[in-house]
Amino acid sequence: MKTTTMTLCASMLLALAVPAQAAGDPKAGKLKTPMCAGCHGINGWRTAYPTVYSVPKLGGQHADYIVAALNAYKSHERSHPSMIGIASGLSDQDMEDLAAYYASSYSGPAN
Image 1 (cartoon, one colour):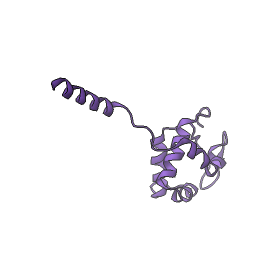
Image 2 (cartoon, helix red, strand yellow):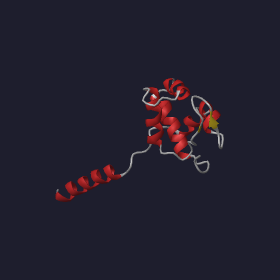
Image 3 (cartoon, one colour):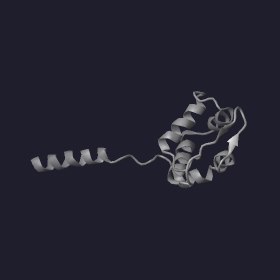
Image 4 (cartoon, helix red, strand yellow):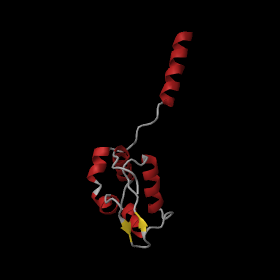
């Protein structure tokens, strides 16, 4: 009985220690990238609206960061007009899928 209880407790602790898998589907995310690729898929791309700045690469970014950034645009916590427009049309699953795809793809150093 004591061994069974210890085994059960150890199994539960091990399950808690394993990092959770991303909730998104990278294959589904890849199908949703056309709206991103026009800016984020071009090496060295700079945007001129609303100000001039280098557009960050998404490949290799952490999935949680991408989801948080998209949610911040959707809620207007971040203020880029184009990103607000894109993020407001995304469901939570769309965001998770895009994040899973970009987190699993690395396309060279970030701008």
